[in-house]
Image 1 (cartoon, rainbow, N blue to C red):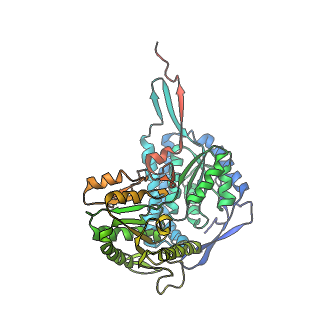
Image 2: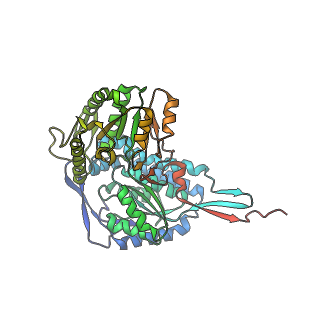
Image 3: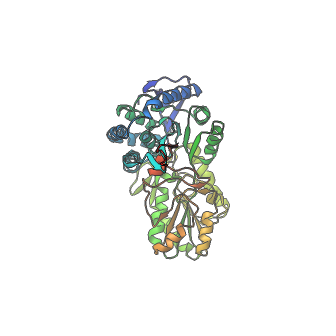
Length: 477
């Protein structure tokens, strides 16, 4: 790849101000595939200065100009989708089929959604004699994770472009290569110099400098709750807006009138997609105690139908992203065994026959309790924890008894019953009876899962300030 040792600042690829570098490791082979430059505060200063200059003009572009720009971005993105899929496969171990059919199209979808919202959004609304103006918030600092790289970058970049903001992006240093391709896409689409800037680096060197920077008006962060707290603390002194999309430990309530054979199999496999590395995965499945044995057998068969290996047939998941992540997951699996949950499928170590790569056995625990580490902590691997309940009220209580509140799942043969349970979950999202994600619906959570929303109109509005111009319409005597 070109540009791995450069940053994209003010419309140009430029050398870093430091000599620091980092190897990008393929989690399937455990071998380096590229070396990136690692930035520092001086690189952040240059990128922010470029974004601040560009904001003066880009913030005043018309709706039509930004719609045309987004369309050209989509054209260029579509032309590079194969490249992006291959890079995701290499840098995070994502199977090619999942990368090309799910991960990379999600990025295109966010540009399309932002364009659709922009088409009809009312930036000016009259309220009596006052005009309310919705204006771009300014320079936005963006820090994104490695698990859904293009999804999480584009759901920030697309609405920022659509609203007239300028930005500085720090992608995850673990999977940064797709962000470099996106910078090439935006450059080819004619995004004006300084509107989008890319600086690679780690949290302490680049992320902290962005969060505390006085000329950044908003920070948008996706990642762990621990890191999100640090971003918010760093941003506090400059009183900038902070939007956080953080961790989750989402409950999946399977009510007693659900189709167990269908739901348990579907949702065990579903949470293991992307190797379980999704913040909104339904990793706590709640089932009636008197059907635990039945559920265990369905879940075991479902997990055993998932192949965690470099190659295979049927549903195949890749490795987790790094050795550090692999080691964390192994420790949590062992803690589930030690605390007395029933290991129904999988377990510690690599899958049989796999000696290289950070592959985790698709794992299911049954007869768990909600106070166990595997029920409290975000594992971020293909590990399902199944907990029993005696009645519907207890299921809701268990679901809400968690510091996170990102997503939730309810399955029932009675749609009204499912809706009633969904209304009682303290989460930012709920999926009823297997409903898929809606790219126009707000994405975000309650409690320690963050604040603010991404996706659709509410995600669009995160990048807007509201100005009240009183006396816009003269008062009639």
